[in-house]
Length: 164
Image (tube, rainbow, N blue to C red):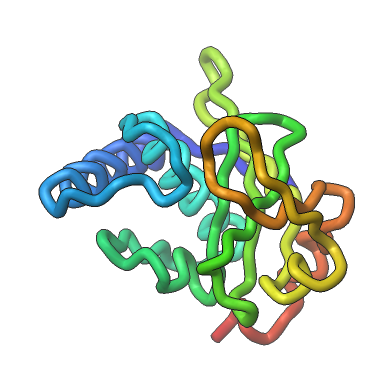
């Protein structure tokens, strides 16, 4: 499922990212994924959340400092800038949470193009779909789910929890 963000939606994502980054810096919080703190990471995450909200017809939460609460509706959104990126489920993520993977790229003169690659529950990543990996990049270990193992987005849009 492809979603294109327009200029206004991109502007909102950038504002939200700056707000989140500033809030985290003021609180002295480090990135739990082990990555350095860059505004571009927060922009990418906000873009993914707006893309999921747009695709599912949900109002985006625009939340700041609510790391364990769902990002959009009932969903945790994980966004990567890698076309073949994988869904990462970390040890602190809840089994009952539903995770959507978004692959987002900026295209010249087109803005953000987001592919909603699929979804799964946290417990599925741990028990059957994912593989436990300890990267040699200094980042924390996680269950890694390949895109082809995720449930297709078309299944998600017909579920009752999308509509509330």
